[in-house]
Image 1 (cartoon, rainbow, N blue to C red):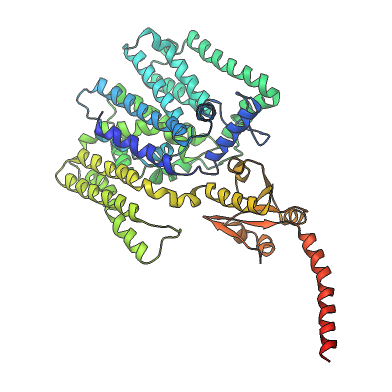
Image 2: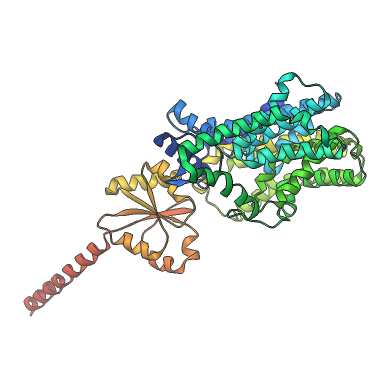
Length: 546
């Protein structure tokens, strides 16, 4: 196996072996899967009794499979649903381009795609976006083979299957993107009337049949209200007037720099100049450009937007840019654009030393030894990348720079556990459980931080949400004590809560804390009983002295 693939696999998989689940999404998926297994549901899902029709079942099935196979939720196993799709995307894109251009070397394209901001980020979290991206790439590649006449008979049936699996992974975008790309490409070619050759009656019948079977099973399990939530509230509602992640139409344009870092100047420069010079000459380049532009416009028109939603266009952005890059390697602006990433990476090691010496690192840590080793590897690789760029070897420079970034991730992995208290709530829950068992406490609650109820996975019992100070007073007056979890920002944002919390002992773990509340009335009653007794004793002593 080629070394770059081993390095990419190690960089993507290693962090999952030592890190905690994030609270907002990853732990929520675990909690939903646990509830589904407990209730015996496979097509309708709930999060603490509330319908969760946001996502189709395929990814949640993978999460549930982990529990069924191993008896617990193994992060490394669930992570395969992110890591293996990356391998699939690289394999398909590389084969696709080499079929048209046998001399094309995919090393730089593979490494660039694997290290491009949001693409790398989505592979390092437990989400379904990368899996959907793989199915979309497979669908468009299958269409391409049908279009070029190199397909086998099975590809006529695989096209609707890939589209269904993309939809079954994350919803409408998995259906809309491949169908839109196919239609726009054929329209640009003046061949829109041939659309039925690729998505004819039999293909539509298979696709609709698969969707109908899925929706029927959802209806049987969840009823009319759930199916209405799935088909209308979560699709039309999010697309037209979103109740989650509502953003302006220019959101993705404004976020291009961070989403495509560290290669943003090179990618935007090559594609921008290439489009300006009308360099789209082959059908392959035309299809890639259509996939980029049509999807970007479609997602910009939707009301709901997140940077990660744009992940399906990344393979087409990177591979189209790398197809055109040889024509710009001699240009000064291209050299400056390619040199931006290694130049910045070279500065990270001295910047980390200065921050450490001056105590400017904002979070607590035990040791930065592995961090320095990782940054040293990135420093060396980036220096080699700059040297290769100076020699005129731009693609080798990209490989060295991207490889250094991947090596940094692998080498920094042993340092991850010390940052888990900031990343997740596993350590917080373990500390609170230990205190609760020692004190005989059986009730848990949290005050106004997102997804706190999903801590039940660690606590093995419900965690009650508390929304205001009145509820806190009620909790404090209960005859039994409770563990109350607190987000570190809440006392800063809520002055009433800060006043309520004043004087209470807190145990801080990472960026959250917990305190013990309850039995307030009993404490007040005891104080009232003890106070007169103290006065009587004092009075007796005074009389004796006299």
